[in-house]
Image 1 (cartoon, rainbow, N blue to C red):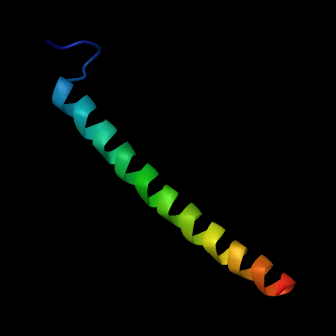
Image 2: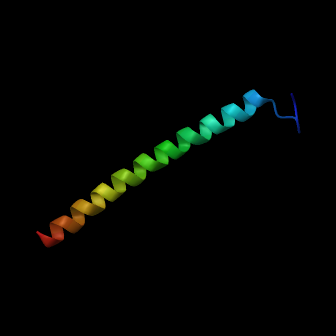
Length: 45
């Protein structure tokens, strides 16, 4: 099954790549939020 020149495997690979990017992005946001929390916590302690 091919449509618009995309093979299902290509689509799968693209989504897997996207998933990994979002995972990295999420971890970075988590780290930033943690740093931010510690900074704010430090100001009020």
